Length: 594
Ligand code: ARG
Image (tube, rainbow, N blue to C red):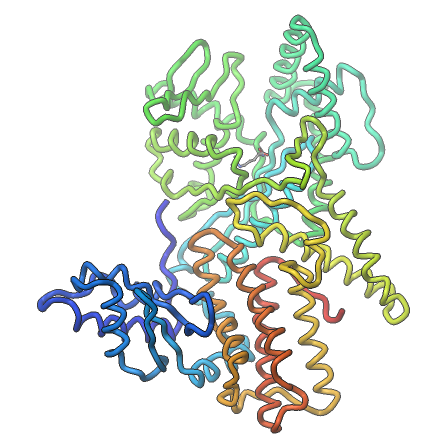
C-alpha cells in the first residue's frame, strides 16, 4: 500500500528542519548534499522522553553515512554550529541525539491566539493534496442474524475515529458499511428456525437470532454423521433459496434480516456513528458469480475437485476457493466484486478495510487474487487489522455463547455510572444526570476501544475504563469539565481570558502544556499516516496530565498580575479547545460539568 500523501510540517518543525539541513550541508564532503531534505529532517524530530531534555530530539544515526562521521560527532557538530534564532533557542547532545529547546515566546505567541480562534484546528483540512484524495473507509460490517458483540464495538469506534481523523486532515472521505446479510451462517440459522418451526419473540428479535446460531452449532456438534450430512444438505438448499430469491425461505430471510438491521441502527444512533454508503453482501451475488465465470474463461481461475478458485500456493497463501462445488459463491468471492464496485462506482483513490486480525489471511488472499486478475487498484487497498477484545477470563466466542454483546456492556456501564453519579441527585435535574451518564458511558467505551494500539488485544476491565484518574475516557472528560468550572468561576469574578500577552507564559508547566496543544496537528497527521487513532488518544491523555500538573503548579485566579491571570485563562481556554477538538476526533463529546 502506497504511503499517505505527506502532511505539511508545522512552522516550528519546518524552521528546525531547514536549520539542521543547513548545518548538515557544512558537514558533508564538498560537492555532496545531505540525503534527507529539510522537510524529511523536520519529520524525524522526536519527542524526548523527559521535557527536561528539551522539546525535540533529533536522532543523528541517519546522517553518519552522508557526513562520514560518528552519529555522536554529528550531534556535537550540529549543537555547536546551529544558529539560535527563530524557533531554536538552545541545543544539547546526549550521545547520538541532538536535543533541541524551542523559543518559548514563539510557541506561546503562535499557539494561544490560533487555538483560541480555532484556526489551528481547521488548518489541516485545507491541505490541497489531501482534498483531492478520495478515501473510502469501510467499517463495522456486522453480520445480520448474529449478535453485535464487543468486538464489533471495537471496530465501530476505531473506524469512526479513523473517518474523523482523515476528514480532519482534509481527505475526501466516504464512510462505508458492508452488512454480512448472506452466507452459510445465515443459512444455518434459518434452517434451524425452519426445522424446529420456531416463533420469534416480540422484542430484541435480532439478538434472538444470534442465540439461535449458538443452538444450531450445538445441535450440529451433537449429531451423528448421517444427521450431519442431512443438515448440511438442508443448509445448502436454504442458502441457494436465499441467493436465488426463492419462495418462503427468501421471505423469512428478508424479515429476519430486517430485525438485525434495526438492532444495528439503534446502536449506531446511540454511538452517533454515520455511514455515507451501505453495501450488502447479498447484493453482490450476481456480480461475484459473473466474476468467477469471466476469470475462469480467462484462465486466471481454475477448477479443482469440482470447485473453482485460484492457486495461491506460489505466494504461500494456499488455494482460494471462489465457487464451491454446490455452485454457491463465498465470502471471498463477494470481496472481489465489492472491491471493483468501490473503485468503479465511487472513483476512490484508496480503500481501507477495518476488519479484525482473524481475517488477515482472507485479505491477503483477496488482494492477491485482485492483483492476479489485473486489477490495478489492488495496491490501493489496505486492511487495517485490529486485535480482539477479551475478558480477563479469556477469549469470547459467539459460537459457544460466551460473547458479550455490545448492549450488555453498555447496560453494565450505565448501572455502574448510575452509582457513581448518585451524589449529584440533590443538585442536578434527573435529565442532566441521565445525559451525563450517557456521555460518560459513550466516551468510556470509545476511549477504551481506541486508546490501545489497533494491533494489540484489549483486555476489558470495567473499573479501569470508568476510572476518573487513570488513562480513561472519563479522566479526559473530567479534565475538560474542570476547565469549564475554572472559566465559569473566573467570569463570575469578572476575569477574562486574553491573548494579548502570551509571552508571560514562561513557567515550565505552561510551556509543556503549550507544546501538547501545538503538536496536536502533527500527531493527527502521523496517526492518519499509520492508521493509528490510538496515538491521538494517548496524546490527549498526556495533554490532560500536563494540564492538571499546570493547574496544580501555578495560581490562575490569584495570579500575580491581571495580565498574567488573563494569559493563564487564555491557556486554559486553548487547552479546552484542543481537548474538545481531540475528543471529537475520537467521536467523544464531554459533558459541560461534573
Ligand atoms: N461481515 C464480515 C464478518 O463479520 C466482515 C466484513 C469485512 N469486510 C469485507 N469487505 N470483507 O466477518
